[in-house]
Image: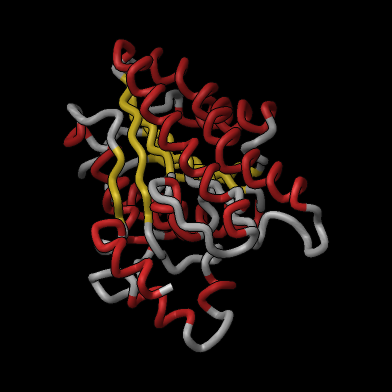
Length: 265
């Protein structure tokens, strides 16, 4: 198995891409710590993993809160004795970050806190444990929206989601250079339109939304969480031992076909 004897902490593991990673990693032999803002969702993932013969624990917490981020790492190490892999999958969009009626400043702060600060905080606490074990792999979730200017959705050019994910990409590169001497690889994945709870409000907005999301990718379909988890699995495994500071677009060709995408907006 590709992750035999490895221990992985997955934030946002209660749903979507994070849950797909937890299930796939466990099938490949990893022991997984599933963190989520909702303990109920985290437990649902761990119950699935354990019912299929895997080992898993559920941890609740907010990645943007320093004490919670530290607890995610310490609880993982306390249970499994080490930490080899971190997947920073917890994230929010401008649509679901705050209750309706929140100010633009409140939405901005929440999106940046969870998507960018949260990635930073959990990585900060994970790094010493990985170095102590002789190395590891940090996998950050950025987005195609962090790669290109695409001022659509809530706030248009003021939408905080794009800069939050662009920040994750730059943080990945910076940390990869700094942590190479510790034998810790740091990479990120830039998903396109993936069918998750986060994208559901847009996909269900009107009858054309789902068709549009599939049409803008040359592949002609919306991605599934497992499409992203497969790439995360490679980055978590020793197969990627010479890969660090890289960004993997999992978008069905969307960024390669930006002219087509923009023409369809």
